[in-house]
Amino acid sequence: MRNKIVAGNWKMNKLYSEAVELVDEITIQLKDDPKADDIIKIIIPAFPYIRKVVRHSHGVKNLFTGAQNCASEESGAYTGEVSAAMIKSLEANYVIVGHSERRSYYKENHLDLKKKVNACLEQSLTPIFCVGETKEIRQSNKHYEVVAEQISESLFHLSAAEFEKLVLAYEPVWAIGTGLTATSAQAQEMHHFIRSMIEKNYGKDAAHKVSILYGGSCNAKNATELFACPDVDGGLIGGASLVPKDFITIIHSFPK
Ligand code: PGA
Image (cartoon, protein in one colour):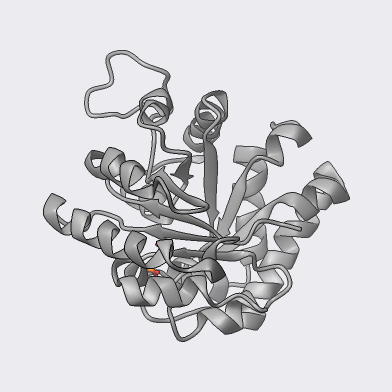
């Protein structure tokens, strides 16, 4: 059985006091929610709030903390960067690598992302590796090609044992923060394609083990339909993860 995962990417939102209030509300609800126990839940706040979220997550079953990015270098004179080792030292467990906002606004390329994945694995952090196509790419029918390149260029240097440690997220760029969700058919199609790629390169075992999340305007209303797809193992949630009630509803949206 693959892990079912709901990860909340808070992006650059919330002041400290608001973040504390948000994590408080989420953890209070989850503590008393045996239905959510078996789902892996990950809160991914901005760097300065990681330690606080880690502390709050103690005592909630399967609740973990992540970072939204990490440096590609190990340590040294890289002003403004945060290393994988630093994230690990805060007791976070996950790192988003290759989010489309990083790829487009900060020009992160395949090689940068490959180095970030390596840096995470070296620290026993789980990368949540994001892939996805823009609207123009989908319209020109090159979405499979682009996603295949994102995966092969940044990840296929890994051994099968390393690859199995990853979480992948398919996030069509045209669906992120736009209110436009991929249909469940579009999500399933791409998730199936990604899983077949993994199978071709690493074999059935690895393909069956790696969780592939959907992200892009996934919310309390559409999560049930998306999570019902056989190759969708959960969600990477932006906007809706800032609303405790919606985040919890999404966690409850897996098929029984
Ligand atoms: P969204 O963001 O849910 O607000 O579309 C998802 C993401 O960027 O991870």
